[in-house]
Amino acid sequence: MRLTIIGSSGSFPGPTSPASCYLIEAGGFRLLLDLGNGALGTLQRYTDIYAIDAVYLSHLHADHCFDLCSYWVARTFPEGGPKPRIPVYGPPGVAERMAEAYGLDPRPGMRETFDFREIAPGRRGIGPFTAAFDHVNHPVEAFGIRLEHHGSSFAYSGDTGACDELVELARDTDLFLCEASFQDHKEHPKDMHLTGSEAGEHASRAGARKLLLTHLVPWNDNERTLAEARGTYNGPLGLAQSGDVHMITAPTR
Image (tube, rainbow, N blue to C red; front, top):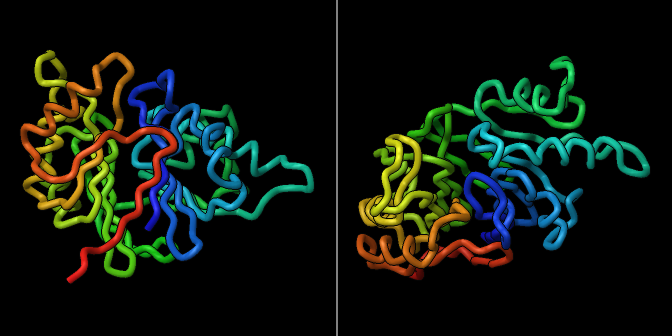
């Protein structure tokens, strides 16, 4: 699997990155994980936006889904006519939420451009990937996802506070892309986001082989977040940065 960081900024786009968006590819299949505000513009640097095969939305906050509105325009009204309909996986109500965001009548809303498929805890195929979903700890219904392909594995937290479900999704994964919006020395709401040290704790409990921190809010010192994670996780560790590419491979036996 090949992971390209399109956007890793939390809550709103930052000066060097759009909001959450990640491109993961395997076997010629291109899957977008989230499509937050500002992401569609940056995505065009790294791939043909009409070559995307499916979109997954972890939850329905603006910084994870609102550029689907722009993508609807791009696929519905290009020169030469509409592009083929593609799947969009998301929480219950995703089709209605996206229609509302763009001010469309919910019937048909965006359904003529996107094949909306509501997700629930469990496993299903997405292209060449085996995907596992589970609820994570956030004020709205939100999911974490695990993807497996030819022996390699990847997990993405979406937005979450501390929860055991996230540990299981990341169990023994080759790369764990985990949010770290908060910092230990600051007051913050419970059951919303993780600190760097909490992200490290979840990765350690899961036995994840590599940890990449994301959803980095623009007002935080990212190096401090990284240092907090180093205090609780001993494996390879880094910050998700727009434009970076990570190859995800199973360990040699």
